[in-house]
Image 1 (tube, one colour):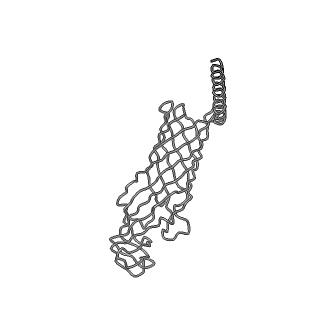
Image 2 (cartoon, rainbow, N blue to C red):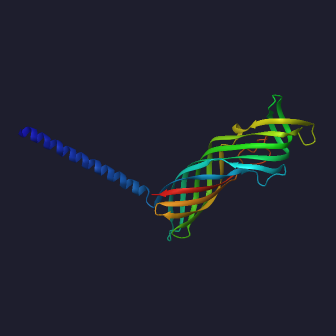
Image 3 (cartoon, one colour):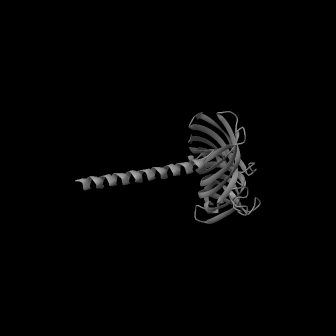
Length: 261
């Protein structure tokens, strides 16, 4: 009986020691994590994007925007924010977000450069198009913003800086209808076209960059609301892409909600 009691006692001592070692490891891990994040505030956010992809300014070939339909665009973001300086009003913020941007438009154009496939099966049409144009743009990005921040008050903060995006998936397609096309240029032979389709999705630029600016309101201790404007500074197509003769820039506003740890 004494042997059994001694064995149980030794087992309990071993478990207690192991538990103590585990607690020490957890404590060490927590201390290392706190040291790594010292001064940094981690946040997770979600929100919605609203905007479009447009040339600036609108070229003379686009005579009228008949309709505009924003896409169902969202963003998910993780970021770290650190205040610096003696008064701790200035700060830096780094993040990584997964986001979508998109829209649909219908426009009336004149002498608009067009390369499309005729829907009647007669082949490719190329030249100066006059008529209607429908366009659908949809893209998904991984975006890294690098922002400077400034605290106006305990609740209000403004921020601005560059962002860099990698396009995971993109679509740029549409159709031309109810019009005619002149071969090569506006003085070429005229051909009536019922409808023609185009798809330049494979020609979209993978890497994009631009600037972002906005403000943020701290509604509660762990919740803030932000409104930002992002403006692409390089076109969605490479410079040597000839099917679209003017640069198109993504310009979007983002309403975001953030949980502050």
